[in-house]
Length: 260
Length: 269
Image 1 (cartoon, each protein chain N blue to C red):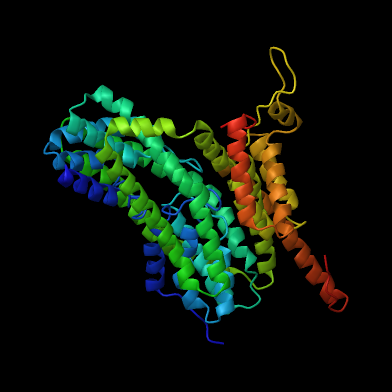
Image 2 (image 1 turned 90 degrees about the horizontal axis):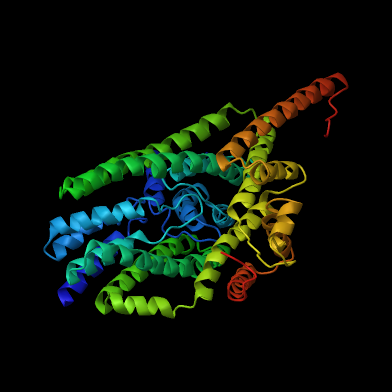
């Protein structure tokens, strides 16, 4: 049991580094399945469970700003519990989603509270001129998540599936739902900071072109970016013509700059 | 004036530093911490003055979100602009972030569809079918099919992004740069406008009237103008920030409202 727990700890540690090493999929169930299988002395079974779980997670992938249930803890823990307790595949499938959802709920605490706080620590480190320390906040944040998820995976394996289910029931729905609502709300803060930095009377109309394209016309972000690019080109041509005319007039009436 | 130039090894540094692009993702500024980390090496090389270093780091601590595989390309372009900014005092540094914002929309779209949409499906399709037969090549091929393009796009993306940025700047006569900056700002703000509408989501299902098909606060605002709630909340935060309300308080406030909203049902997931 101790050897298995230590094995799970190291598998989870490396698997959770997938986003740290170029989003490289080393934590996907298809990869962790056979490795957990090796740990329990049944590579074949691990491969097959991993493949089945991979299919289950195929439809769940972070696109744009959404984060799917955590496939890393889902894959490792489900494979391990099935191989350890001899559950069938049906039992495995009923386990995987709650486990992955628990993983997501825990990650959301980082994404909504802890990492934004670290952003602000980095901001103030920059203000103090500590450039390297500010950059290192990224590493601290990254390893906070890696270690947290590794420990949770190992802990959940040790206490077993029954206890995990009981813990899941103890978390109030209001809290998890509130976190999900916050994940949809918080990007507004990032955008507001961006707007305050780049906004001016001269670009305001174009902000609303983008907004209307997305809100009314339901154009996706790529489409809107293409429209924005075309509008930018048109404005560039117009501004360039004015600049050339300004030059022409300028040389004609003695170098007076035309301020438009 | 001695001109500062980035070397190939600086660009390789960007590539290596960009690998953990998604590792500190958060809902406030998404991948900003990772982007600042990616740029920190070249920033320290390009700017000798501490104040310039601070300004550059602050720029890259602003909101950033893109598919992680296509992000190094943006970092390459940003590096070429930082290089220009370090050498040319008349350069408008705000165009650096405008360029980033303008590029992240299209590159997310392309990156998501290529990497998450196509490549991942191909890799898992082949990997899963082999693994189901108990063949260990399944997971191995899965990793190779996905990661060879993944690493190549990151590496060459960094280098091409930088080269593209440099050649673009070189071709620009000095007087043209203001207009180019303006055009980039237009593109950037169009994308911000679209992202406010698509990525900020607020649902208020509080009923205003009874009956079979009751009007809710949500449907009232939707009828007024779609996505007006995200727009209003974003402008409200802009205003609060202008009033020097600390961002931490705004974040905490939104968190408290979200949890209260879920508990009392005036907001929905």
